[in-house]
Length: 319
Image (tube, rainbow, N blue to C red; front, side):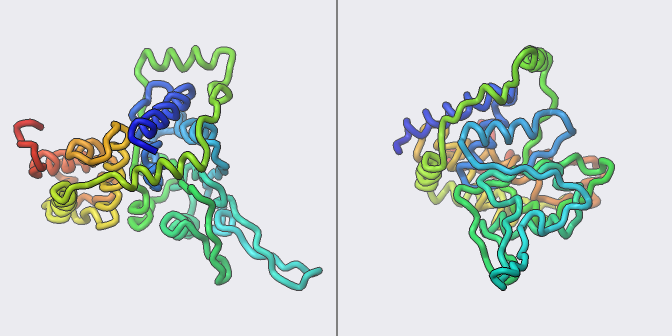
């Protein structure tokens, strides 16, 4: 697959998903690129803004087998991973796959379940496999988790552990639609279901070709150094008690490659890194008491770091 074919296919998928997800073009593009970069997506927002619709639209447009689970306090780890049951006729234990065995797993309101159930997702997100009773089972390829969570502090929510947050390539927020987009949403629901209008425009073989193309996108040594400089700045910032891990830097590189491919290039430029940096970094840093007293948020700190870190070929005055 060459650059133009890659860009054309990405645009075709985006346009199909936009039939159901109105006015959120940037969110649609970033979600698709995370899927194509073999990453997982966390969407944090209030109920009713289209998080689930986004995931279902992608499952239809990409012809992916998908499962959805509503995470509640009574969900058990075995509901997600699967379990072994005894077959009396055969005198053996048989594995019954859990809901996570699919190509696209939608974990709805992930922060409403217990920490024990949340931890069941750690192996499948990192290793793309599940171990039950000492036996490891590989998950289908391609594999992506799209998780939604209610804002921290909402009734019945539990904070996700840092180790799990770090396994999400990007964190997005849908936000309210603007006035005209909300009018368009009402019109689209008048006598039809927008999700029903989505046609499959790709399948797993096309996704794998796109993933291979993105993996081959070139990154210059100076751009590598720029990415590491951004990560290092988070670790040394006086208002952060937890900076970005090496896994986060790797996610930034992969996401930047995806941006470059979507733009029709086979090489990464600093602008690609800047564009996706907030979505990759913000959920990976932890504010200290100094930041909270100064009413400074993670977005403010990442803005400052991007502004003050020298990018190859770009002067601070150009940003």
